[in-house]
Image 1 (tube, rainbow, N blue to C red):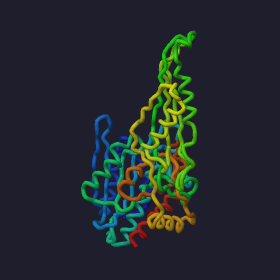
Image 2 (image 1 turned 135 degrees about the vertical axis):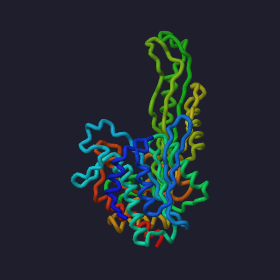
Image 3 (image 1 turned 180 degrees about the vertical axis):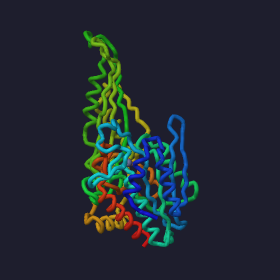
Image 4 (image 1 turned 45 degrees about the vertical axis):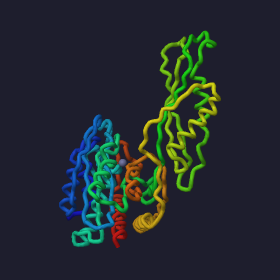
Length: 385
Ligand SMILES: [Zn+2]
């Protein structure tokens, strides 16, 4: 059984798996993993209003602990393919790099883990006797993420299977391989502030009540800091993303004004407490004079942190042995599927360097693919050792 991460990554890149298309990527992994002795399940999840998505769960071994690697084979669209110097679905190696959409986010990461697992099995008579190795792979991460990891986790749990620890192979490193492990993520909450006034003629403002004035007052009040950060997190942050009146008329005071905002919040808040805090601040600023209301969008992106312990120690040691770097723990950036996995087992995120993800000519250094494979290989070894 070959275990060449560059070849596996190249083959995956050649699958046009732009969400929601499977593009042959899941089928390819099924082939490789089944050949190595994994029990492979493919499940398609669907719900009204969304595209059906193919997912894969593969496991070798029937004992605990069950170390699971999670990832996604879907990629964002390439945009104008003509501006790529190397075709986005070509998987070309040029100079020191492997090029293509998904090279770092995150077909490269999947390829490295598969190569590491195959190498480990090879060295152990083709079996996993000390526990189990699993792969939890979705085709629905880059888009709405409703028919992916969240449902796949439930599906595996309903089979009575348990995970002990998870590595999510998203590109976690900032500048060089080994600089960063993600051990938690901020929460994300979207809301709309709606101020109602009284519509009227712009020449007779005394007969109207312009909601834009009130909206400005409340927006200013909501810019105040939410906290000073916590042990593992930067300060929470509220950012207004749009102010909408939608008034095409030059001589009309509008009746309503809206502002949309997003909050990235740390572990000093729960969603409920955060909503209460925001509503209270607005109420204070309104002082009974600004008629307003909030609409909150449902959010499945809660804050979480993976506390340092034996599992994170083991990953840090493996990374240091291969790269010479001692990674720092970070909770920055957007949300990821780790927000779903954390309800099942501790999860840390470690993959390639994120610099070119989602860009034209996305690429991963071949040397990094080889090093990341060595890191995953050592993690597996230490985990079962
Ligand atoms: Zn990703």
